[in-house]
Image (tube, rainbow, N blue to C red):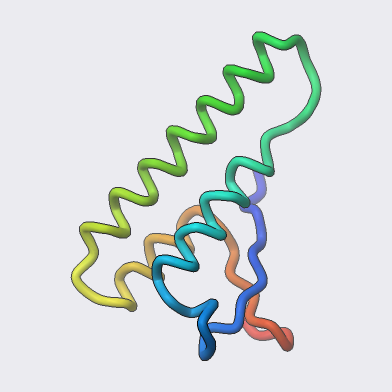
Length: 85
């Protein structure tokens, strides 16, 4: 599965690690495919929520901004507003 993309301004308030983590979590959950039965959809959403929680735990255990950013980039593609990555 392709990683979700979040668009942020890393130099502004979007660059705050907690803001990034929140946007990444929302993107991971929003990327859940919509097809299948209700049971399949719920299972896929729970799996996405588990992945998002795993990312958040790893970010919270990071010792630097760069390390936290690296963890987030394992789960989502960060696209800077204005086109940079």
